[in-house]
Amino acid sequence: MAPSFSDLKVILLQARNTKDMESQEQDCFLERSKLERHQLSTFNVAHGNLIETDNFFDGYDAFFIGGAGEYSVAKDYDWTPWAMKLIRRAYDVEIPTFGSCWGHQLIARGLGGTVEHDPDRAELGCHHVRLTEQGMGDELFAAFPDSFLVNMGHHDRVTKLPDNGIELADNDSQPFEAFRIENRAIYGTQFHSELDARRERERLIRYRSYYVEQLHSEEVFQNIMNTLAETTDVDHLMFDFLTKFAVR
Image (spheres, helix red, strand yellow):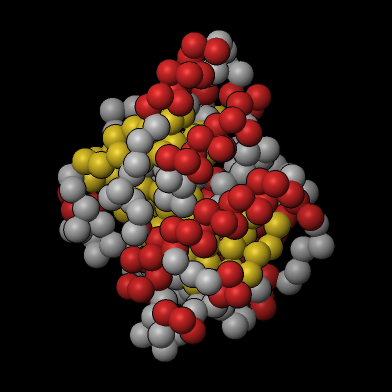
């Protein structure tokens, strides 16, 4: 743990094929976590050159895992075994870990849960989620309203939590919109905790071609864009995570 917020060192795991979205995601995590740029290091699995997981977290106080427009946790890539090992390493060394969307799914699969491709339950744009009873009592989410708006962009979802997973939020579409791991500061949100409305709009435009089934017409696309709203309850979530779990 860091002695103060300004001393924090955080590493962000990415899976981005293009420089524009790799940089955009980094900016989003910086904006929502309130970290300075020099406090955030990054590692992109799409670049290859995988490093030994045993020493991956040396010198860091927290671990963020971002999204992945081009990749699916429900599929296997040459770096998938390495990523699974890294998640288990994060659990073993008890580093505070926060996964958003793809990161949420990666944590679940890495610790024994299941993730499936489910385009029929894809969520795009701005939606409500509600806290479960456990979520209402959770130290990170306890100050949240029972129901709140979030930004979404996924067509894979967690269908089974790890055995020590605790469901914190759901909605009418699906369970497991947020979870944590028992006795660990390890959290996942299916919603994009790093995106405000402007950043969500950028993502939807950039990754529109990956959601052809859902965005099959200009009218549907514009209707989803029109749902975008400020998700003020989530604005502070990643900052709160760091202050609660990564700072003494």
